[in-house]
Image (tube, rainbow, N blue to C red; front, side, top):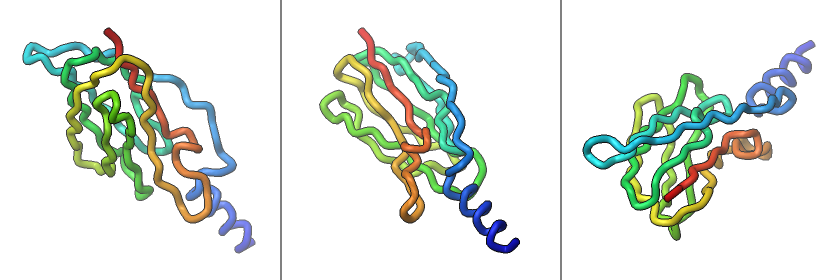
Length: 135
């Protein structure tokens, strides 16, 4: 019985065995009066909300990110320096503002690369999204 208990705890902590299809949550940013596109995003439980963000090219973006409760560490990572978007921030309960100006149109991945020991990283568990930059 103890072995079963430890296996269940391990499965919950690692996120295996209980995968579910994540729905796409789309958000289209508008440009505020000061010329900035502002987006709020939360992460946790191997998801981002919203997980598909549409912004305009060459217009500054302020991405306000935070984490829902829980003890599992998460981050938000984007490696698209060619498009003016390159960041890696740990998520916490207190919101953080990530500022960037997208300089190229296209679809760019954003994800969490945290992982526990030898298990899949959080991106492989579904904690990823897309920032689409349009004209």
